[in-house]
Length: 283
Image 1: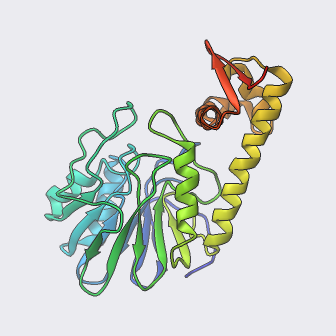
Image 2: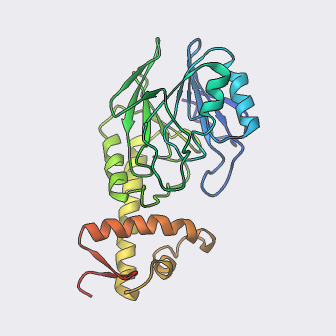
Image 3: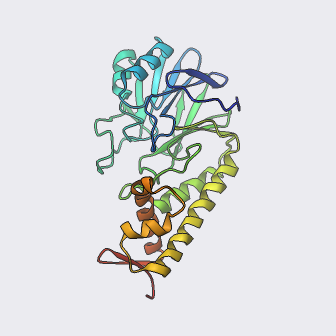
């Protein structure tokens, strides 16, 4: 792995491992960091993981990089910054689209996504000299798949793990309990590095997973403490106390993960929602 942390430049091709290249789309932002990463694997028969958003310059950069060698297009999930270019790339190259075949109905998805081959947990994509194993990791999205490069230990994590930021869990499709369970699942796999959907390669994957789990559980305890102080309270008011360590300008985004945590606390018998007012149990 190339551990050099250089600025990520949209449209630039970067080799992150032998026969693994990264091209980042020009869609930086609060939710996407430096932009959405697309990965190209192989030398002759190529695989593209996460074609990304419908941006002409990104499409052109990907097509220039794959030429006539692209055989497979794999999507980690159907959020609009990851899968929408799949169809255009398929039309241009004849490559086959693979991914989870259920698209959630929550208004945040690429509703047109339709894979030629549906994948489920444990399915193997045989690409000749290399193969990829689908790992179902719901939480950020119910149809989220990571892809493990067999024998190499590189896991393409999509939005399950991002570098430099935690991911947003947005109910109703996002599920905090499923997300934590999916993180734990990664600790059982032979992973040497994460190639995330946003940001740089993460070369200490187990440490990162444990850090993310600990962070979410600490946040949950902070939410409980805030409920004890100010509850009953609306979720809009609670975010100010539970996320007072993040800039107020992103509280509207934090609100989604707060909701997911409250749902988990409610299922675990630690919080109650009375007509839109949240409180700890027993109060």
